[in-house]
Length: 290
Image (spheres, one colour):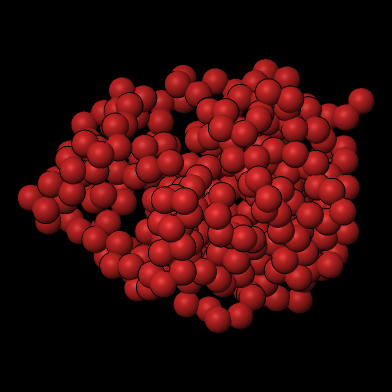
């Protein structure tokens, strides 16, 4: 009951105003202030600095630079089977199951529609309707860069405006359709194993999302915005032929949040990825269906 009450408070919080303040605060470069902020943050959220390329947490120019720190490659070895999809982030599994009748499981007693998640795009709904999904949660102490599960060619990206509910477990358990209501960015790729979608979900205090091909993704838009990267696109302003390799960085959160991976029926989420399991970048996320 206590957790349900706490979760309900997120209905009345000014999500976007709080997040804008965090955006500014996370970019303070005045050394005494940013050092104090980083010290407080790491006290509340212990970070394994020995895994970072720059191990001195006070060497980062801002809190945001600290959040998006690079890791030593040897700390995250990749699954050696090139046919397996890699886990794209550090974090934990929120849920990982089959998509049933166009519905995605959120938590006990909660689900939401695939169509709503992908912004009403019926073509995307049809592609993934018989597939599987993995919802991966990044906590404040985790590595915040997002990598490619497999090599793929970017076809299009949808920015979908929305709320910024927290994605902490107790909130996800009590707010219906949370992932289909929050701001998100849907990235659609073609891969050798079939279509794949990577959905970056915003949340309160996630001051910005970004991708390597677009940069910061604006949260000011009031409508769904589509960016087309296919060869037959008539939009000459976007880059074309964007191909990212397996394990390559595709984006990052400027604070933690959630990534949802959608597969078709050609790929199966690894059986050991059950709710609340801790995960690391590079471990096996999904295997080809035999």
